[in-house]
Image (cartoon, rainbow, N blue to C red; front, side, top):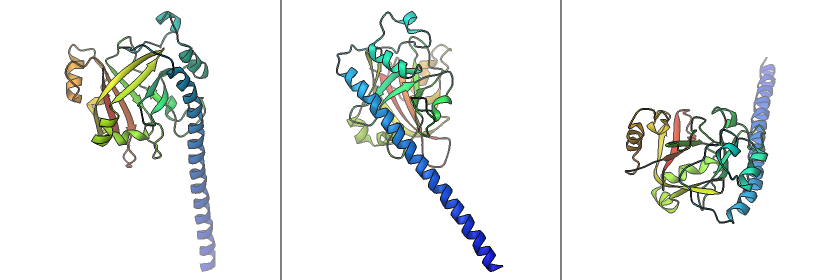
Length: 246
C-alpha cells in the first residue's frame, strides 16, 4: 500500500511539474514573440519619427473611414493600418520602454490576449477604451498589461517614484503625422473604482469636476490616463499615470 501511494504521489508531482514547465515555456515564448513584433514595428516608427511633424491639440476621430475625416493620411498611419486596421495612434515616453502602437476596437476585451499582428498572445496589445470616440474627447484611457519584465505597461510602476516621474514628464501620442503631448501630473497605485476611469461627460461641468477629482492642473482641456493591472493578486488593483494636454 505504501508503495502504491508513493507511485501515485510521484505521478501527481510529475504531472504538476510538467504542466508548470509548459506554462513557463509558453509565457516566455509569448514574451519573445511580442518583443520581436514590437521591435519590427518600432523600426517603422523610428523612420517616421525622423521626419518633422507639426504639433496637434486633439486626437482625430478614426472610427469612420479616414478619407471622410481627414484630407491627408500619413504614410506611417496607412502602413500601420495595413498591418492592423484597428491601429489608432503611437504612444511614446522618451527614455523609457513605452514605445508602442495603440489600437481601438468596439470593446475592451479583444486585445487583452491578441497581439498587434492578430496572434493569440498572453501579453496582448495596448488599446484605447472603445468609448473614447470623438473629435475632441475630454478623457482618453489606454490600457496595457503589466509585464514584470517591463514590457508594454509594466514600466508604469516606475512612475510611482517621484524622481523617475520628474525625469520622464511627457507622454506623446503620434497620430496622422501629428504629435500630441501630455504633461504627467499624477502617478498612483489605486483600484478600478478610482474616478480616473470616469468617461460620461454629458452633464454640464462634469469634466471640470472630473479633472478636479483627479488633481489635474486648473484649465485642463483633455486628460490622458494610462492604466495597468498591479501584480499583487487582487484583480481590482491598478497603477495609473495621468497627463494633461499641453
